[in-house]
Image 1 (spheres, one colour):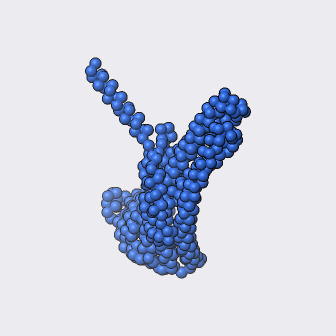
Image 2: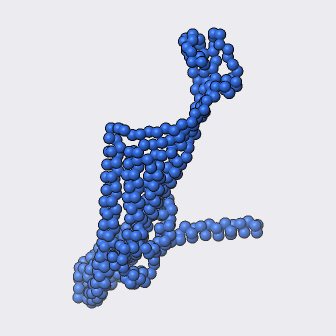
Length: 446
């Protein structure tokens, strides 16, 4: 019995530990790490990188000699060549074997350009993988902050609902005491119902934002998933103090961001592609060697059929030779390939300029949006204070029977709106400032 109890207690402890682990809230760093490891786009880019590695390996191995083997079986009827080359009326068969090898000596620098292009393609693929990871990190941060924003909006809605319920109780007492008309009671109940609907809508928005983040993380289900809530006051102060100028962020990003590096490596690859196209103008030289032997068998006539092994030894032949190929005219194919490669270089140069310009626009937009959001957050604090004082004053007037429910509701809605606008400005500032931090090489974490 004691063993069974011990097993039961241990089992319950394990189940409880798993349950608590499942309910543990996710930090921003954990969300980013999990998304990077499990996102499908990241896995696709990883496969593309591996494909580039294979292409580079193939280009490097093209310098080595090849080795090929072949075998043939032929049957001849009627007049056919004998082993001596004389045509005779006979039926015979021949079996041949050959092994050959060739190695490129000079290919007009084609192999070197292929290796250079493949090497920079691999570097570009690595940076594309890093860029996808960065994009996912930014998306996770955006969704994470959206959850925090929706939680704050839900708290505001719940507080407003609590105020409306307290006001409903006051109204009920005032109606019972004859200090307020019965219509005020119905109006207060309608206000409570409206606030309950706002709470329900806020809960739905919060749930949908959790679903969005869980899907981005590629989680199987959203049940039990939640995120940590940092100390937003300290985070806001930290982000305000760490706000960097767009020039500094761009200077760092243009040297370190994967998007810029990928475009730069693609440009270098296209330049090697131009060299590869120009190699078509050069002659090529290769060296080859081969060994072959054969067996002949006559089915009729006076020809003596020697043994298989003896023929294989006696009929062997070896060849060594160089092959020179000189391009003379190939219908302007090489010339057009060179033109296309030169155009590709121009396109990659424009693509690099475009990526740089786009990066600066994103950084500049993030900076000025962050500054504007911070100013709005500061000014919204004054608006919140004014709306709160107005609401408290209107609430006292209503409790004293000197104001209507409509006036009370209007002051309450203005107060709630000012709180929502302040929260919106805060999280907009936090996201934009985090983007600037990211472009300046700082980690996305609270």
